[in-house]
Image 1: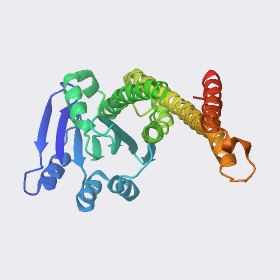
Image 2: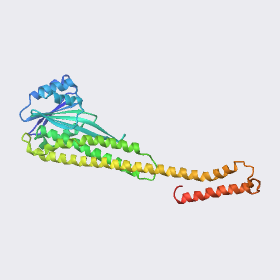
Image 3: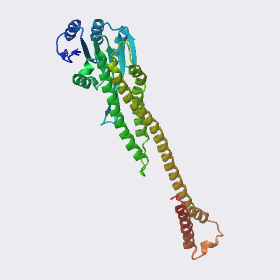
Image 4: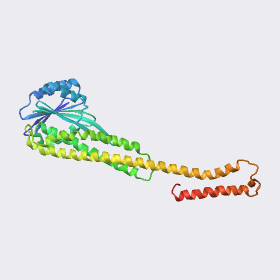
Length: 329
């Protein structure tokens, strides 16, 4: 757990690292109790225990249901208000190049009159980049805890755009493979990528209406923050539109690939049928002469054997030429 105390007017910050300190949560709680009117605290917690969050919740007067959501970390993007505290759940996304998978996590953001609390779950930590941006933007610090909400969501939405670009590259490569002359079954790859896109969509799509109310003026928020949230909302909408387009395109790519596989199967059946017809000619001739009837004039003819072979070869050759002309072979 880390706690940073920000001075709104000067932008100065005091960082309290409690991860190695004995009784670190108590140190943080004592410092929170001594906040000045022009100060606010940002507490960053990674995968907390229920006891740790309970102590923080009691100090910050957070609702028990909000604490339960923060511990479970299986929430859809949403916003809820508990008295003076606003709780916002946001899904984090990042692209793993080694496996070409989209991994997800979650950040629960609590905004109160004098504090911001972020509870993170997952391997990716957007609060590190958000803290760096906040330290470099004093105008955002002057907005108070709402500035933390904007900065964290801005970092997360930027990561959406980066992940979408990576998925787009994979989709483009998949399209090339589908429409190439090579005969390769890509059904599993297409389905796997579509599953990643669906997971991507489920993280972004519910967040659009969550951030929309932040793009208009609110009585309890500084009006200067509205343009910043509009910018975040615009980036989110673009990512949402791109993910929807990729989802639709993947469905079309899958249909095209299945049609191509069907064409391969038809070609194989035609080849098999053509070769079966070709071999049917000598089989028929050999079958006739294999009946061993007593009165078969050709059996005593000197040229009967080579003539039978010639008939077989000629019939098979004519069929082969016809099938080649029609594209069956």
